[in-house]
Figure 1 (cartoon, rainbow, N blue to C red):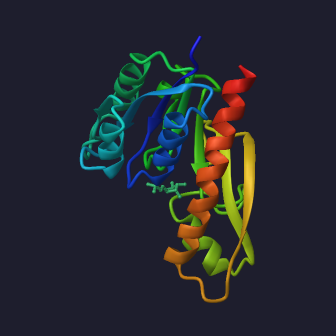
Figure 2: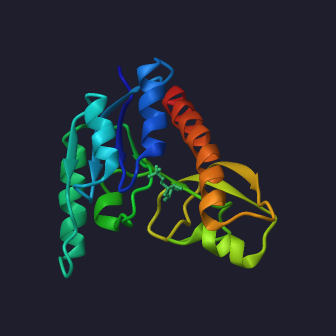
Length: 190
Ligand code: GRF
């Protein structure tokens, strides 16, 4: 039976692209059945469309009931009967309402070596702290902010001339490989 993957993404979608490329190349022991976003203008959706993968969007309006949004997102995701939900640059926290529907089946990629530098500004925070080594982490999403069980990590050196942009770009290179490898391992382990 095919291992079914739903990817959630909010941004440019380069992590998603790595997964789409692996799928297209037949390197993924599974298939990406849908891509969802909270941002209708996300480039990630264009990438999914280009690859012929179905998409859905669910924006979160200011002041909107959060539990309800979580439930609606879970409904949209569940329609695709995923074995795994992958957050690849998805910039919304998934609440209990969502996570209870996909227990231990939702993973996230984060641009730091957790538990250092959780949250939205991981790369900026690592630079500000002056660490010489940072990296990326793939973990199982739980109710906390970047606190779930760690599945895989990859270290990236911080260079003296790094800006937030150059460092994040190098981290994202490591994230793409780490995420594809982790998704492959999870699919194989099922
Ligand atoms: C990644 O660094 C991810 O960890 C973070 O946002 C970035 C997403 O990049 N949350 P992209 O949109 O996949 O290019």
